[in-house]
Structure formats: C-alpha cells, structure tokens
Image 1 (tube, one colour):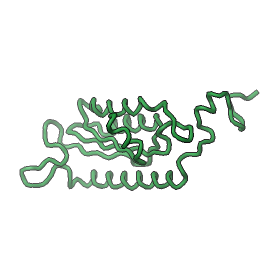
Image 2: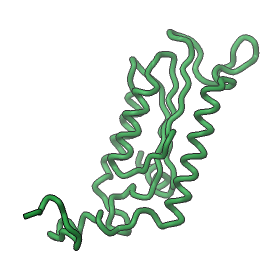
Image 3: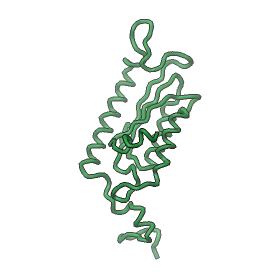
Image 4: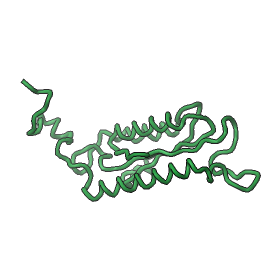
Length: 169
C-alpha cells in the first residue's frame, strides 16, 4: 500500500475490487480497507478528513453467493472513512456455485466467463456513470464545504455558530 497511497490520494474515484472467499471479502480486500483506514485520521488541505470529496465504489467477483454482503461491507467502510458513495456504487459477477472459472477466464467455447452477462454489464455501466457523475459534481464545487466538518475546529472547542440540538436548554 505505501507505493499505491500517493495514487489513491491523487484519484477522485477509488474502486476496490476483490473476490468472495468463504462468503465474505477476501483478506486482501480487508487489508486494503484497513490500510486506507490507517490514514483516516489525517486531514486534507481544508481541515476535513483526508478522503472527503473523493468517491468510492466496489466490484465483487467469485463463484459463490455474497455480492451484496461483500459490497455493503466495502461501501460502508469507505463512507465511514470519508469517501462519498453514489447510488449503484457496486457491481459484481458470480459464476455457478462451486469451483469453476473466474470472471474473464476463457471457456472451452472460446468465450470469456461473465463478460457477456447482462446483469454484470448493466450494473458495471450504471456504477461507472454514477461514480463519474458524483466525482464531477464534487470536483465542480471543490468537495464538501469545510464549514461544519473540520476536526481542528471541533478540537478547539468551537461548536460553530448555529444551534446544536445537543445543547438545548
């Protein structure tokens, strides 16, 4: 991850892709999320969490059920550390249950596993457009406004100049 981190920070969109292993995300997928989380306490130039203004998505593959379970874990983790998640921010392909070809593997008839799967093509296309659209929107407005979500302001004891329901009399 150290050699990839500069590229992650430079990107407006991050898509985490990985397989389903034993009904869950692979250890490598989890490791990638943990490495991102290791930097989640750092701040961007606006004093917000480091990943604010960046868009996240995921692709899940495998030969067992669990795309939605795995995607929900990845997308929750990404938004928790500051990534923005668009509608339809996940896509996936699972072959027949049990041992078999992975996505893109060449089959005996010369086709590639999953490549012509309409469900996968549609969801990947929707995900791509939604991630691009959200990234463009955030870039056009320079990300989220810093007012109201700067850690250094909170740490300094500021409670901003708007009524906070926690402090009602």
